[in-house]
Length: 121
Image (cartoon, rainbow, N blue to C red; front, side, top):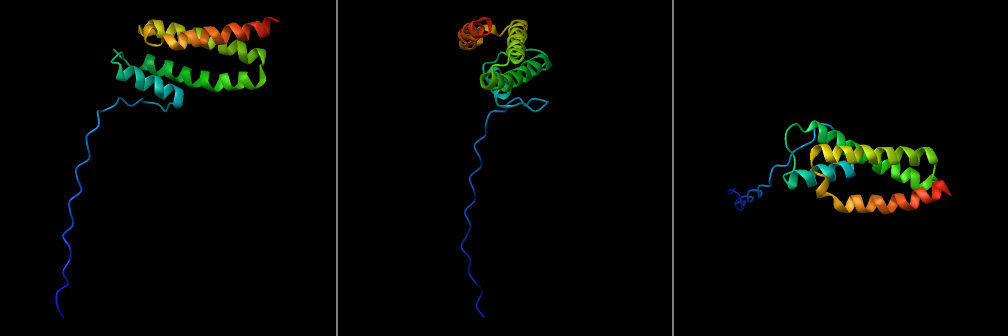
């Protein structure tokens, strides 16, 4: 019996290295992970990552709570969301990254003007 000839297998090209990305030490949702990635990509993270991680977690909670508010317009949920936004503002200022997110500040101002009119009315 003749030896079976096999085709030589071409070597797979090495994967293109991707820049290393900081990985949060706790799981984050979509909104928190986006903030985490954006701030790391912008080079705005200095010192311990714990304050940033807490801020990212608040962004995740905000995302969840905002959906609840938009569905039910419950005053307690709305008050909690407004309070959470205040905490986020403080966290951004403490980290010195407030200026990176001007569109978020503008969006929140527009959102809250309309929401507060409904609650007060």
